[in-house]
Amino acid sequence: MIRIDRDNPGRADVRQLLAEHLADMFATSPAESVHALDPAALAGPGISFWTAREDGELLGCGALKQLGTGASGAKQGEIKSMRTAAHARGQGVATLLLNHIVDEARRGGYGRLYLETGSQDFFKPARRLYRRHRFEICPPFVGYTEDPNSVFMTLALDAPRP
Image (tube, rainbow, N blue to C red):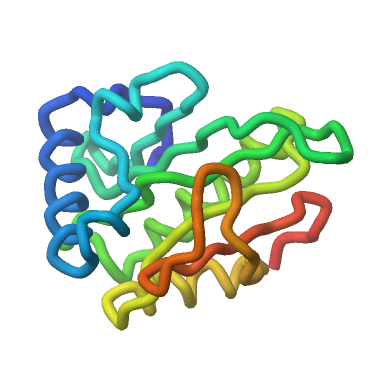
């Protein structure tokens, strides 16, 4: 059974998965368009980090970064570092992680989530995942600017899950 729990991004197996994530980001996007966080940043204040594991084996990870409040006064957050280990792809790990993060955000009083992903073909599976979960294309949000290598998406948390 796959379990999703809060975790430490400094754990050896997590650091390895995040290193693979960063390597893929730099291999597919220009350096100025890479917005992935390293383990130290993911352990920082205002970020909640989770891993998906089965029998202790790391399958994937994801994080929620607090962005502040929107015009409505509700908290806003950004999904960061969504990654599924190569050996676990196609098993629904990303969906489980995404649902967990969205549910945690709802419980935490967030009104809206955002994310940035790549525009290249490499990122098509990620964009399909987010669209399936009702994320919509949006303009750049807090700290981002227009970038042809980025796709920005958002989800109002009053939207029902599929």
